[in-house]
Each structure stands twice: as C-alpha cells, then as structure tokens.
Length: 210
Image 1 (cartoon, one colour):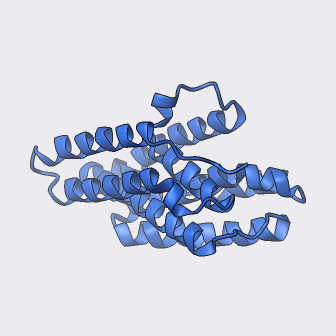
Image 2: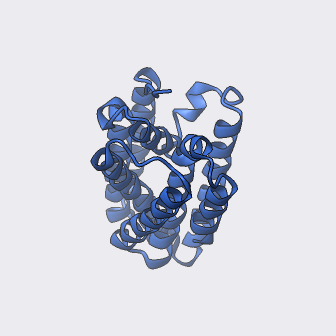
C-alpha cells in the first residue's frame, strides 16, 4: 500500500507552494491514493469495507496535505467527496475480487494492476496526446482521475456523470463476480459491463474547466 501513500505524497511535495501545479496534478494524485490503498487493502484483507475505509482515510490525509501546500479549496467539496467515495468503491471491489479468487497471491495481482494503471495516469498527465482516447476510456483509474479533476475545477459531479456511472457499474459487477466466483457466468457479465461502460465514457466525454 506504500504505492498509494508514498508516491502521492512525493508528487504533492514536488509541487509544494505552486497552487497551479497542485491543481493540475490533483486528479491523478488523489486517484493513485485511492487506487493504491483501496485495491491492495481489500486484496490483503479480503474485505471490501476495509479497502473503501482505508482508501478514503488516505485521500483525506492527502487532501489536507495538499491544502496545506497551497492547493485551492475545492469549490464543490460535497461533489468531490461523492466522486471519491464512488471511486474508492470501484477500486476496493477489484481488490476484494482478487482476494476471493487468488487467495495469497491477491496482493501480487493488485500490485500489478496498480502499477499498470498508475503508469498510464502518469503518461496521460505528462503527455496528454500520447495515448489514444479509446484506450484511456477503458481504464477505471482514468475515469476516476478525470471525474475528480472536474469537481476540483468547479464543473461538478454531474459533468462527470459517465465516469461516475462507469465506476459504480463496474464496482457492482465486480462484487457480483466476487460473491459468485465459483460460477462461470459472473465473469462474462463483469467484462461485458466493463466494455459497455467504457463505451459510454468514450462517447460521453467529460468536459474539464480550464
């Protein structure tokens, strides 16, 4: 879980006292905090609630640190909190699925997923045009990052409706798969849901305020 704690803290410290840079990087940073702790905590404990609770606790600490370093206060704090809760549930659900299906190796799969999606977040933040839009639309971490960023720039959670629906939908389908992991049909349902919601995100882009 150090990935979800140490790396976001380091990213915030690099941009300390630079409100503009803190705001521009806040979406990916907070997403990494939610994802790194949410997936790995749920994978290690096997409990969805633990993943959600620890992920939210981590992002609260990151938010307080960011505010202390110069991040402007969120213009719509309730919208920001709502997006983060939905995102934490989506990430924790995946960790719970790994724990149910992979047992002691769950943390390894969780680490692989976190590292992969974190690298995409980094590339998307530093090189916005490097990755195709259709590829970014497939990644829950990117959904969360852009949704969080919209609330921090004042657009509100309804501007990120597609991402919120996608995060919530994948969380529910993943929990169904985790609950019924010994049956074959939940997995096609989970992947079909993921692809369908990715299509929704692709064709319903999220506007980001400057």
